[in-house]
Length: 255
Image 1 (tube, one colour):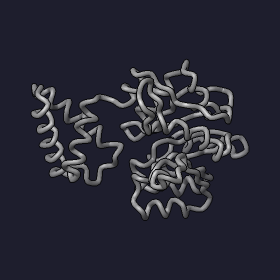
Image 2 (cartoon, one colour; image 1 turned 180 degrees about the horizontal axis):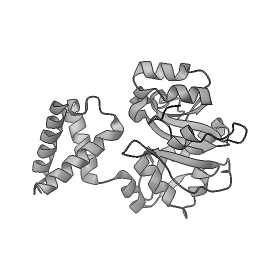
Image 3 (cartoon, rainbow, N blue to C red; image 1 turned 60 degrees about the vertical axis):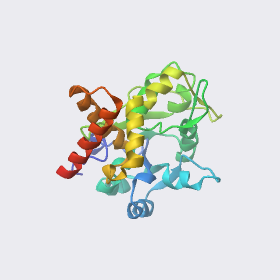
């Protein structure tokens, strides 16, 4: 297989014997894919799919949210050429746990329970979020979230896939668990408040700025523009927001 960006390089050059290898599972957020790509994904032979969100009262969360797709060597080769997966592809997992059980294990992480605040949906699988959660090795939920996962690969900015690192050796228990977060950790997971606010305002008022940009990358573009505003010496909120707007608009025109 020629080297491709959609799967970890380690798997391409040194595949392990099938009888010894753990399952290979990809985590994809369907809402970031176009309809044709979603259809093609589910029709790929050799793929087993399972949603992380199942809410009868909010079916769109299932239809557009994250899914686990277990692949065979053949189906993984086919996924490798699906450039349309783009920003929807958030992680590759290695695990010997059955995909339905693994989905049940990961599902509670979709809802964060910050101390003193109401529960909130959390895209825990985003690279900047899962890395912080993985670092909380002493948290009472760490074993529940990562147990039974032999490796978690996340996409770096240079298009390479990086491993999170050491995982709990034991398989996670099947009992329900909650992702209880301290105020400090919850704020850290949400990122810079100015970036969040600017991204929300610009997305609502000027959605054309983010045409063709996946939701997971919007805040990154805004953050880079705000850093440029700081370097330009701008300190007033209105000035900084206007600067970000002009910069993003100029970047779009240069494409």
